[in-house]
Length: 245
Image (cartoon, rainbow, N blue to C red):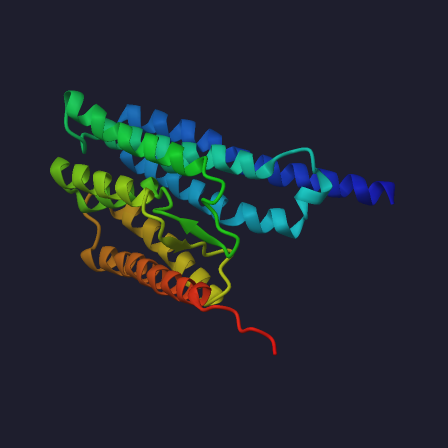
């Protein structure tokens, strides 16, 4: 029994360590951005996406909350997500010249940092029925498409302002690895999107337009499904419970 319990503790620490590697990747992304190596930064961003997409499932599989109740894995996950999904992508956009120069670029880059700081500190940022409340701070995805599509600083700035505002709009966005409806097809499509991400990075600076379009189709699927399911959950909550006879 003692050896079994020890193994459970070791496996739990392994899962937390796996999550924590995302912080290392965030540092490497920033360093790659400073060096001007955009492809390397995006490859590291892909690794961070894979880790974030799988560490939660591993944590539930090994029941780490029960095995290490005094260690807050959710807080660790939020710290790592802020670094990899928010801070590092903003640095990447600044260093690659996709934001305006001078004070204007600084102001624009601050918006995701402040908006996401607000969101990450909300206790209801992840709802009980497994939705993200407000735009889920996918600034790494925003940065990826800005670079893949090679858009102007004006378009990049507009996209950042809009997404920062959407953080404050209480619309539910699906949590692919925890969703209860269409979970399997959504996870499959998410995996396909990661493959398309890799293909696009390998093809930089001129990715195949069809590959980019296919990857954007997944983003459209994600947004449409999120809006539909959010509307459905709101409607279900609005229906008053029947009074027992």
